[in-house]
Image (cartoon, rainbow, N blue to C red):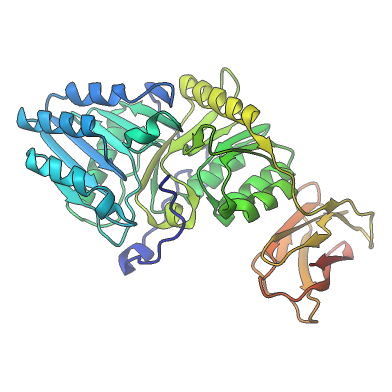
Length: 433
């Protein structure tokens, strides 16, 4: 299902790409109004055919994977009528072979086709008609996937948003680099991590999440933080052993994870729905997978909106998928621990954990906003240097959580976690198996 799991050949330009934040510091999440929403596989892709057929002046398409003869023929027909049709096709991660037939058909039919840089995955899926309507989606144009894959599409007709998308397309079409143009709730990669973690941070009651991949520490940390503050977090994915460690970590922290089998609808959608009800909420719909490649390096596009139709559509689909999924339970055990040490209480820790897994420890300080630090003595006697340990500031209610990865080469045995806060210290042993 074209899951992007690794990609190493990034150019120096892409590695140095600027990270663009969507939510202004200290302000509300920026959103856009969407005019239509389609839920796949129920809707089908006839709306794309109709949109292309209805073009009057121009068509711009950026697509990760194109192998739909109907859409290809429609693009050719419009080009031969004199419509300015431009297409960007992904060339990286086997894209040059996957899209070779489409590129040939389109070029022979007078469509202006360019290959995206081979050093950067172009995973975005969007279509702009007559510089006035932008179709933004999560699905590729692959007919064999249409009937079995969960995806979403929306239209954005706000002039500023459409102009920003076209300006970005122009630069990409001319191989102008990784620059993206911001407007409203548009979420571009490279650099979409902040927008998505900020959205997750806004949730106060519920979070609904679907994604094809789970391989981003910032996203995982944000979901865990939401669960820790009392948000009901529901995650739905298709079963894949590549994400077992990450999903186990989420489940251990209180995130509700359910998985669908390959015989059920395939979760290809990339959506986040914060505090969604039948009448309100904030939803992200886009091409971004939860991976470092997708969020930090790829060309991706999504949109954040509070439009009720989009919120209702995503909520209904994710709720249905969640109900059909099988719950997973952490293979480790989180154990409540009594108060231990002069104003500091360790409230939970995974007491038995395998190398390569993520450990999580929570504590409560008698002092609000306390300054705390966590160190871990490994079975070897050495201090762990894992990212995630060290200083952390407790919340206004005195709660603090650390999450870190147990190194794959860590010796088995008993490790000791020691918390030092202004209010006091506490220690707890756990077993590395």
